[in-house]
Length: 500
Image (cartoon, rainbow, N blue to C red; front, top):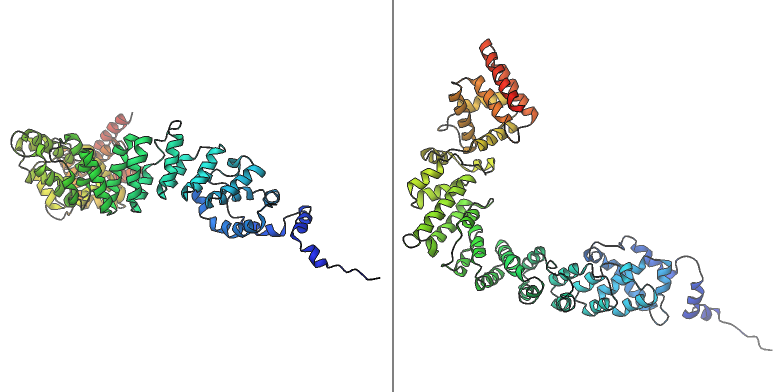
């Protein structure tokens, strides 16, 4: 009788039988071990970008595994049973790669609530323009909470088909006004994506937020394009603003940015300038007076019809010049103030009334005085420009905060004069402050220091206690005789009365 032989190797390598046997084995199956190596990939995300930063790790393992084990007898249910966290990776991978079939399988056989697996599926699909995935998610009732984030992804990555679907599907039921924020506009300009900007202005915003085109999109596009030297986008935005008669936005960018001469032809020279707005523009902080504002303002006063010399528009020119002078005085924009006084043929009475109002610097930041030298000091003295008292106290206070040897610093300040060794207006103002106190107190240094301390205590934000203590010690060291001590006690009584 012949002996029957068996080939055990053929039996145990049969894929179907191996899978049946593995199904009843405890622990993680051999083909799933690779998923343990992606433990550092999050399963919950604030936005799609967090997944996308690590998606290559998931792709390297998921793609070959699905090619081998996802078919008629897919091992996906077993994978999720053994490693529950992989449900998030599966659906994120599917949305990222446009795999509607994979999403549908997970939805039908593993977990019907895909939002419970991942909250960024719309984001991932929109990022890559996978319209079929977006439509499928809508059909199964996927959560709409993050549609605004998805819209940002679609806009930034230039997928208008996704945005068109959102408009057609959600515009009647959801408020889409803020779905494309200013930050996205900035990014599109930064990456020179003019085509997408044009589409947003032409299609998206007229439906989602019509006012944003005038108030945000075009002004922000123009400003950003000028700042980033994207001249093609700047010219497009300027032409769009011109077509909508938004001359104020054009004028502001022209005035406050460098290298904007190419923008002036887009401005309607017959526009009516609002005087208050012009004043606010020309005193914008962090914009160079001499290099940007003054040369551009000269063009504005020369070429805009409403600001030209002589009748019938001369009256508005005078009002505008006075307003520019007034706000430049308040904001401490002294270079602009000097240009107005010396070059614009203003009425001398208008100049005198404004510059002698004791308002100079009232709304300025004290350290801005460091920009101006002795020549500016002479100009201010010639025109009797008086600084605001509160502003002077701020300047003195900042000096006090920055010195360690207060007595030595005070002696230096009192020995200088505005016409000799002082180089900046920052120091001149302190010297003038002490000179005024000296005149009021008949030249007594002890009285000057005492009054200085008293003025500092009446500030809205007095210097630090340590600084005040150093000033007080200096004052105390100067009051050596009975007369000095009596004066000191009298001033201390006044300070106590002010404090109470």
